[in-house]
View 1 (spheres, helix red, strand yellow):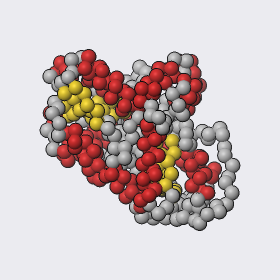
View 2 (cartoon, one colour):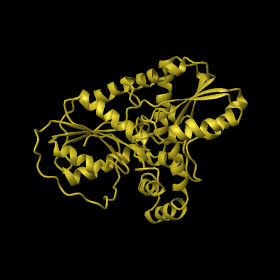
View 3 (cartoon, helix red, strand yellow):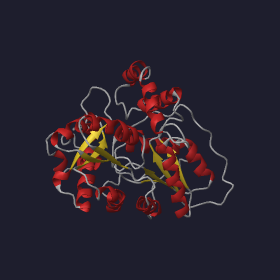
View 4 (cartoon, one colour):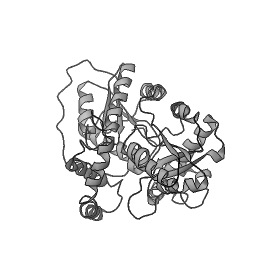
Length: 370
C-alpha cells in the first residue's frame, strides 16, 4: 500500500462480513472511496450514544490502554454526554440527515458524474460503513482502489485511523486488491486555491480579524506521531523549524495551510490568527483554545470576526453548532458585534476539481495487502 505514514496494529472489527459473490457486471479498472468521519444515524440519544461509543473506543482517538479507555467511555462519558450531544445535533440536523453525511454523499455523487469509474462514500464511524461500501465496490468489479481520506492534515485520530480501517476491510474483502492511499493534501496549491475561492466573498466584507479554527488534538498525539521522538512541542518555533516530523505533524500542517491561505489572499499578518477547538478532558490540548479566543477578542478591539475551519472539508457539528451557533453566542455575549462563519468547502466547484484530480491521478503498480 502506498502511504507516507506509520501504521500501528489495530484490533479487527468484531462483525465480519462474508465475501461477496463474483461480480456480474463489467469490470472497471479503478474504484474511488471517499472516507469522512461519520455521524450518528439520527438525533436520538440511543443513536448518538452508539456513535460516541464507536468513536471514543477507537484507540487512536482515546489513546490509553483498553481497560482504562473502557472505564472512561462507559462510566464517565456515555452516561452523560449523549443527551447533550444529541441536543446539539438537533440544532443543525437537516431533513435529509446529518449535514456531514449528506454533503459527503453529494460530493461523491458529483465526483462520480465526472469520472468513468465507480466513486463511493463511506464513514469511518457508523454508516455507511467502510466494510459495506467496499463490498459494493467489489461487486462492481474494480481492479484497484484509490482511497481519499477527507482530511487535509495528518493525525492519528483522523487520517491514520481511516487508513488502518481500510487496510483491515481490504484484508477481509480483497487481500489481492492494489490499494492506493491519497496522502494529506494540506500543501496542495489547488486545495489552497479552493479554500481562498470559497472564502473570497466573505473576505470582501468589513471585518476586523480572521480566525483559523482547527480541530484540536491532545499534545500527546503530536508527540506520538513524531518519528524523530525529539522535535514536536520541544520548542516554541518547532513548527517553523525544518524537520521530518512535519510530515506527520498536525500542528505544523495547520500553520502551513494558514500561511499559504494568507499569502494567496493577501492578508496582513495582524489580520488573522490560529486557534484550536473541540477539546475534551483535562489533558493539555493544542493552544490557543478557540472558545477562549472568542471571549478575549472583544476586549482587544475585535468586534467583527470571521471564522474559517480548514481542518474540515464538510460542514458538521463542530462547524455549524460549535462555531456558528455556540461560538457566535459566546463572542456576542463577550461584547463582539458580529461573528460570521465561513462555510467549509462542501460542494464548491474548485474543491470538486481537486478531488477529481486526486481520483484520476495515474498511479504506479502497488503491492496488494496479501
